Length: 138
Image (cartoon, rainbow, N blue to C red; front, top):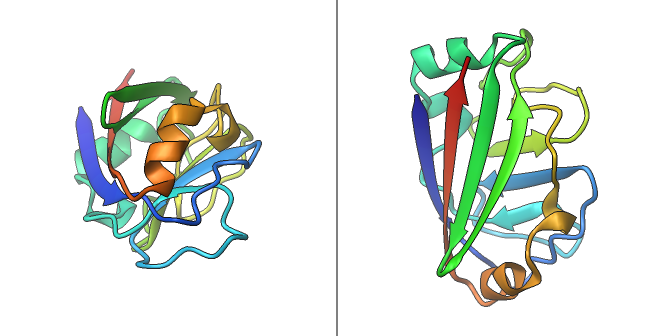
């Protein structure tokens, strides 16, 4: 199963956070938001299909986040967790840790914002569109 979110970069994108990455529905970004990759997302976790959410709640679920910006693609792999709620109406967050809140869409990620290719980050800082595809197996 797959969910897609479209958003756009922002001049304050730095992607320097070492343990998370986020796409938000907010239309602004302060310099402190170093995990945020894109703003003005067209969807939030609360919009996702209930079957997708249920599949992600399995501890055996493998969740893959594919981030596409122009010709740049990065893939982050993580896993599901029984406490995932997908209740947030603002942001989708991938985490390297096991921390779960209403924004969390995957835990145990093998990469965070800081690990994304720098040409992708430069494009995002210039306002390039981003597509986030979340796919769950398991």
